[in-house]
Length: 139
Image: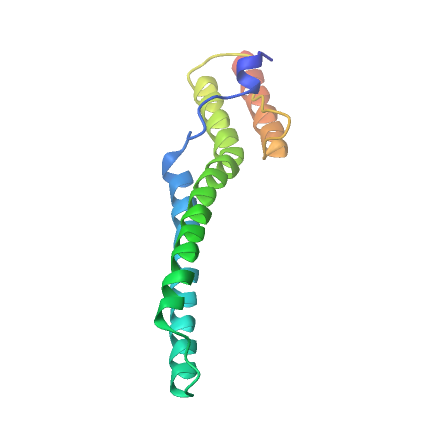
């Protein structure tokens, strides 16, 4: 197998799937941020009504680092999401392309995935199916 097939440079091969997974991850992070903000507001209200409220300046010191932290988490979620979904979308893209080649009449097509890709067993079954189709064409 050629080296360029071993290491695909394009990480977004099925944007619809990959971006949907990333969007769900970001939604979960945002939901966590909103939940945290709601709980912090509730805590601040309870503490303030008890007469032991911290100065409002304390919130101005605490909130910016928390917001920066959430932005960093979102950026990391995007990068990790692209790489993690690539391990799924890449093999599916590869198998679909090889199936299309086999359906167009090309003989000897074999699905070859990278060592750490998902769906190795499915690729073997697709290869067996393509071999059977090739055998039926000749027989």
